[in-house]
Image 1 (cartoon, rainbow, N blue to C red):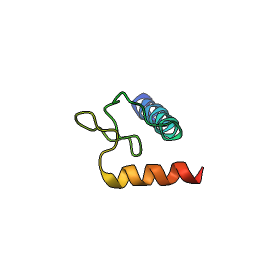
Image 2 (cartoon, helix red, strand yellow):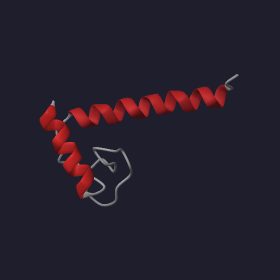
Image 3 (cartoon, one colour):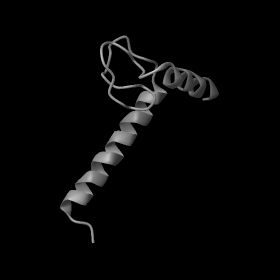
Length: 65
């Protein structure tokens, strides 16, 4: 049986995934968020994606929708 910590982890993961999906649907912001707009990983400086692969995948996904 799941305890309170497991339940809290599941809720936090659900919220994070919803935020990532929302970010993927939006145009990239001019203001850096500190997270990759495609995979949600933390990024340094003022980048919007962690690497060119995530940027390309993000752009491809945007074109498909």
